[in-house]
Image (tube, rainbow, N blue to C red; front, side, top):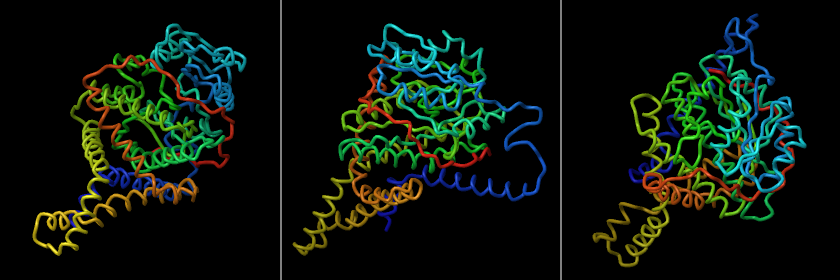
Length: 443
């Protein structure tokens, strides 16, 4: 039983239990407030302040950094134009050699073309300066070129800015499923990524965004909003980083610029995830390398965010080691148990191994909690086919663990230029779910 509990904690983690519980408390508190406010005649929206003016889509600039995105840029612009005026959409074409810039202009967006390739962060900074976005708009949304926005993105996301302490709204990532990947492996990888999004955003980020905590570790650059007034205080294009969004988030915490808001039913956007193993591993390597590089750059300090970050880093390393050891430990455990029975030796070293690491502890301690995460995702996404795919998801977690540990030393002994090459794209359709995700909890 003790070994089972140890394996279970290493696989699930204290972070999941801690922030999942905080998220559940947020839900309870939200419903309690709604019940207590029943019959109230106040006209102020949740989180609003007397005398404040609610921001509208006219106050938002949508900024897209794009590098050779001709297959998807038109639909991304059309999606954004459904929630903000098209004149508010700005494209930073970063050394694109295809028709990205021409298509963006034809769609009515404002375009700046850059040479040479500056990387996403450099392209963002160049466009913010070129179009004077921080002076012209109250909010700047950073949007990836392959992202489609939910029709109610602004209706659910902008109200968070009613609270003057909120300086960023982290977008909720969801997976584009149309068109589907043409291969079984591709559909499996996209399904696994969707599971990842649900688990992280429901069980971690929602709790981390609670007002007393404010320890969200990433405002994802694929579709999130920042108050324009803090952009000058953020080193968006810090040198030596593979990606910018972790660093921008850490800057908010390090400089105590304000609170980061997030709710899994608000500010939803749909992103096209890699559907080949090569593109999947490349993207994951870039993400994990960028995370470790940001940790290297900022280090650990005193405060809630840095304490939560230290706990997360510790568990990220230990759980990755546990996943890499899963298959060898399972084979060792099964082999020792079989040998003990065949040789009828209950006192030797093999017997000690069989007792210390019983197959049920390794098997159930890893696969059962992992499968329970899949069940949660099925409930949230209403995709019952994931119940079958869930048996194979731990194999991808092993790949994730290997990349995580592989990029750790690279972050400390190597450097990145920030230049980029987009993964292979699938021509997209603007077909995102119509169901309303609900009113955001602003507490």
